[in-house]
Length: 335
Image 1 (tube, rainbow, N blue to C red):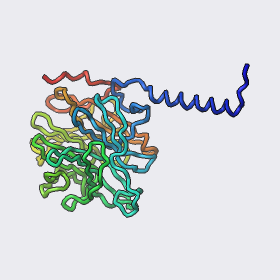
Image 2 (tube, helix red, strand yellow; image 1 turned 30 degrees about the horizontal axis):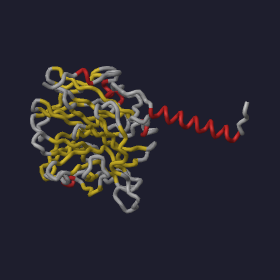
Image 3 (cartoon, rainbow, N blue to C red; image 1 turned 180 degrees about the vertical axis):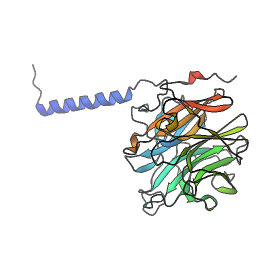
Image 4 (tube, rainbow, N blue to C red; image 1 turned 135 degrees about the horizontal axis):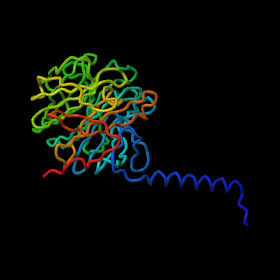
């Protein structure tokens, strides 16, 4: 038997272990369903890091933009791509933190709840997010805007501001059927929820800005079905989960009617341990919407989990019922 020097043996075993781990990461079984609350891996076997996010469907592909998080630090905005909503490819940082210490998006600040929409007039992808300036905690309460000619970026930071002078924290974007875009945001220390129409280039707020309601709500997620608008929000309890609420309106500018809690199932009164972030229509499916939420882990934000659940309708009202596992076959194809 030929002897192998110990150092060579260690190197051989280390290399073997490395390639074994690499192979294990790249041979994750293809995902064919959603498992809310479980660890979600990308196509390379890495844990998806895209919190407080939203989706954009563009040219046959979904893009998932979300906060890149360390255990607590805000590290920019990640973007992932997918054809089927199950399996995601990491496309890298869509918007990175700046190395310039004087920049509004330098480290030690916060970039939360990023949302991206496409403007067909300017042919630009426009990102809005909740921005907190470096070293100021949650004092700034501003809306940040960035743009890119390419859906995956890199996005160029443009500016930040308070829409019409109002504080802007938790937020989402919504593009209506006529192409008009809107920013829905928590204001006045999160005691007000407001909606403002954006300018035609989607880069600024117009003066069409209205108070939807005052009820200490955040985490807005908005969608439209059958000429009605539905808005799911969360209460303000820090990282702790709480009861969701559903409002409905015939017009985006209201009046908005509170119709109760849309969650049904175990822990429904705590939104299944999560907090709303976005509602995504499923392309090619009839009346199909996915409720997206984050199950925050404040001790390790990177390990916060994703709760994606189907939206169903009872008596013409949306319902989000808990599912341990589900897939898109529950919905029929559009005719």
